[in-house]
Length: 182
Image 1 (cartoon, rainbow, N blue to C red):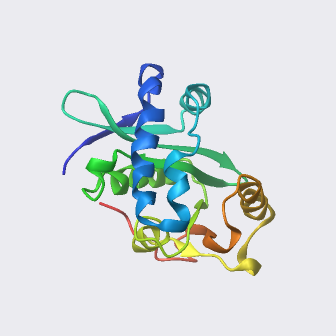
Image 2: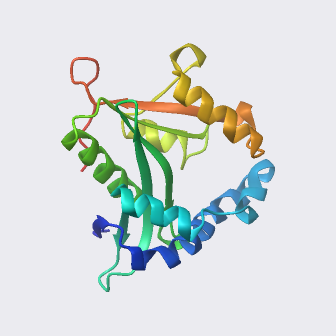
């Protein structure tokens, strides 16, 4: 499915929590994680902060209505993806892949060394999805202090530590043959 990806505008932010709620419906199929579908989502104010930093993208339909979003921040020479969400009924059509490609392109344009994220292990739309895009799952020794701190904070929100992992996509061609995502 072809969709336009653009920077998120302030007027997009009211619908982004609804997209996140819809995206979370996928967790209903995993019994021990089904509670995530009913959990809190990122506030409009938090989305506005990402928009104002220039690190939020949306994928939109032909009427310019958001179907998904990605928000990130730059820290320690890395672009860290905080959230990727696509409407449940639009998942599996390449929209998330396109948002990731936009984030990677931005990181390359900013000469950042890597893109990082945290996610659930062993879920097709989480760790396995990112592996297909060239991300590596980090073991405990591979975690830097920033990623270890993010994982620890996630645990305080009730996310099961044994189901979470950090991942990295190196953008330094000497260390990795990181793919360019179409």
